[in-house]
Image (cartoon, rainbow, N blue to C red):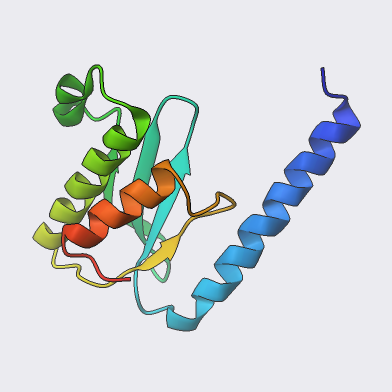
Length: 125
């Protein structure tokens, strides 16, 4: 069991890492930001307009349209499907270029699978 101090230190470290990654994304503020969140079971992707502060497009493994076809697949395969759907929805809205915000996650595994599927779907970042 982690102590309260250990949890606070972990949370602070994650926050600093997230800010470090986001600081690099500030260069192209005019482009929307594709952000990724992954939990133990699900993965979520959003394309956010930082100037307006709104979510333009979102997709997740919990979407009703995706949930039925994902049963029995591995987590990286699910992330790939979410990336494809996210790219398709972005194309419908006319978005072709984005900035990729991986948060404090390493570009590895499910995050990488989602990013590569979005690239294959036509998003450029």
